Length: 347
Image 1 (cartoon, rainbow, N blue to C red):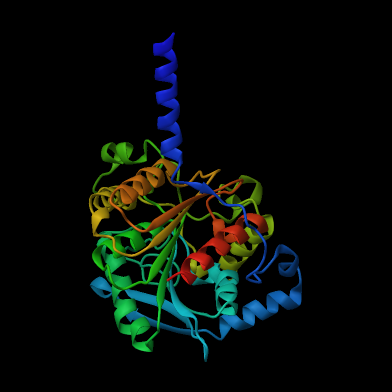
Image 2: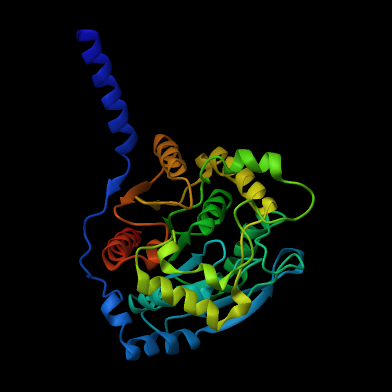
């Protein structure tokens, strides 16, 4: 009987220790004057966001293999707190981040955002522009480094932070491993550090030389974007705003991922986990309770490894939230951004 109690206690301690590095968010007071659902229902408020976004400076540069990379800049005219570089997720574009950019700017930050190659208003690598494809994952990081060195850094900011989401998290974490001194701190929303099982195992069997959509995906379909079927957010209003943004800019739309994109991403996960010790940048990571897009176990494993190596990092579990924390319901979005602002303020 004593042996059973000892074993049970041991298992309990193991479970507690595995979850101890992920705290739950609690503070959702809107102390940073973030946009609310009520405000987004007001046409005048929406017009303010649109007008602000349209005033942003846009441009392009040539990334690796001469792919055109689109970007936008929203620079503070005076009293800048810091600059933030946004690394967006797969299928995304700057147009999806209008509300977030507006909120960041209101809180004193300059914002730099580029559409990753193969999506948004950036160039594509293959003829079928609807396919989510990448030939070399490192090119994502190389594009970001060019954007940082040649455009963002030239504006001479006192501090520079990284804000990364989903696939942008895999890109951003690799960037930190390769460029340890570029950012003062970094924040990761639902980072793609792994895909749900058995994605990576299956792609080894299914990937061929021909570029094809991965099983279960396909071309962008306007009939398949109903809120009730989405796995991204619990906020119907913000979800519809995202869909509307792409309807207004059809060139930015992107369909499903190809086997090649999945394979390259799975290879990158191994690289990221092998190079954790190279990270010198303080970072904070958020994992959604109801995540259905990326692997939350990968979040847990990565944070555990980083903390064992003595890295300056924090991790939070966002309760009652899905993948898209920046377009989630007010409570979940607010508490996530509150914690990010507080974290950045320390550095």
